[in-house]
Length: 214
Image 1: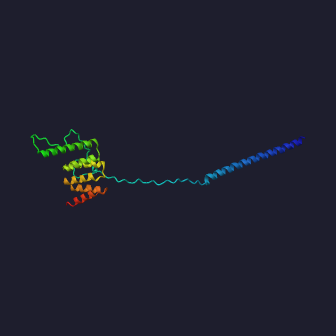
Image 2 (image 1 turned 30 degrees about the horizontal axis):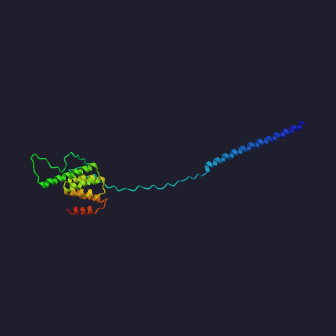
Image 3 (image 1 turned 90 degrees about the horizontal axis):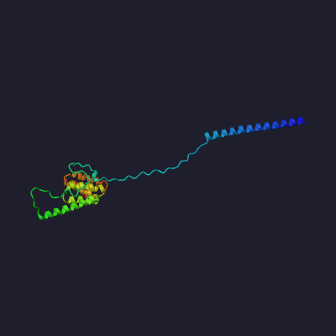
């Protein structure tokens, strides 16, 4: 009985030894294959990058900016510069009659005309001070042009052009005032500048007329 048990124990130990060896072999093989697979994946796999198409940026359309008369560099520096006129109602207006030491009696018709013009100028200035816009500034420029006050025409034409530089009205009044003041070159230059941006029949005709005055 003792020898039989001893043989059984030997067989059992041999079997356990084989099982332990197989486990070790399988573990080593698994580690080797895992390491080799990881190495191969890192060094030989090709990763295809995902490219997201970016739509081309549309370049902003260039806007044509028309310069205003206030941007003009005039050759005649003796005339008034561009300012924002602010006239107090208490100030002496342009058409107010001068006060002389000796009393001068004007004819009735001229007195009435001067009074009417003074009243109209007062109303136009009051309107512009209340609402400074293109219409009020242009109305003042036109008012002074009718009275041949060309320095004031230039000032108010520039003011009107600040509000709407694409309108031909202040440019034409400006050119006419320059022409009547003897600055024909500036009158032509300003019309050519404006016609480079805006097509105007009246401005073309006036430009051709001034060019023919040689």
